[in-house]
Image (cartoon, rainbow, N blue to C red; front, top):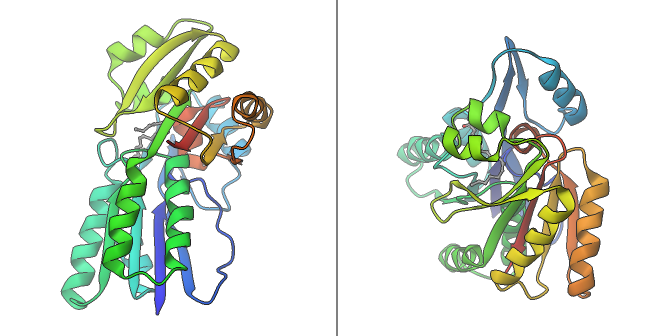
Length: 281
Ligand code: X90
C-alpha cells in the first residue's frame, strides 16, 4: 500500500525521506509567483532570499497563482490512498483545483481513496497536519479512522501571525483595503489570526515587533495553549523567530517548538521579517 500526503506550497515543511515500514510519499503542488513578466515556481529549489530581493526591487505588479488541477492529479496518481491538505480555499483557488483533480481521477479510478482537507489556514498549520498525519499512518488505522482523527486534530490547531507588511495581501485583494489602511501606519506591526472562515483576521496593531510578540503569547494563552507543539515559520528572520521561541519557552519550558523558513508563497504574503506561528491548543 502506498500512502500519499499531498500539500500545496503554502506548506513550508521540507520533506524528510520516507521512513518506517509503510511507504509514505510526500508531494507538494507548487503555486506560481509572478514578478512582472517573470514567473517563479514555488518548489524546493526556489531561492527565497533571491526571490524576495527581486520582488522587492520590482516596481510593478506582482502576484501568485494556484497550482493547476493537473499538478494535483499527477500527485494523487502515484499513491493508493491519498490525503491532501490545502491552504485556505477562501483566499486561493488552490483548494478548488485540488477538488477538480480528485473528480478527474475518480472518473478513471472510482475505487481510489482521496481525502482533501481545506486547512482554512496557511504555513505552519499545514506543517502540523502533515506531521500528525505521518504519525497516524504509522499506526494501523483505516482510511476512514484517519479522516476522523485528522479532523479532530485540525480543530485543536491555530495560526497567529505578525506580518512584515500587508502590501502584497492588499495589492492582490486578499484582505480588504479598509483593514489594510488601518494597519498601514509607519512602525506599526499587525498581529492577527486565521479566522474560522479561512480569512485573515487582524487582532492588534502593535508599536514594534516586541510588543507584537507579547500579544502573540497572550493570544496563544487565550486559545488554551498549554505547552503543545509549535511551529514558527519566518521570512528571512530566524533571529526573531528564535527570540519568540525563547519567550514561549519561558512560560512553557516543556513545549516543543520547531522553526523553519517560509516557502515562496508564505514569504510573498507574510513579507520580509514576517512570522507565522501554528500551535496545538
Ligand atoms: O491562489 C493564490 O494565488 C494564492 C493566494 C493565497 C493568499 C493567502 C496566503 C497567505 C499566506 C500570510 C499570513 C497568514 C494568513 C492566514 C490565512 C487565513 C500567509
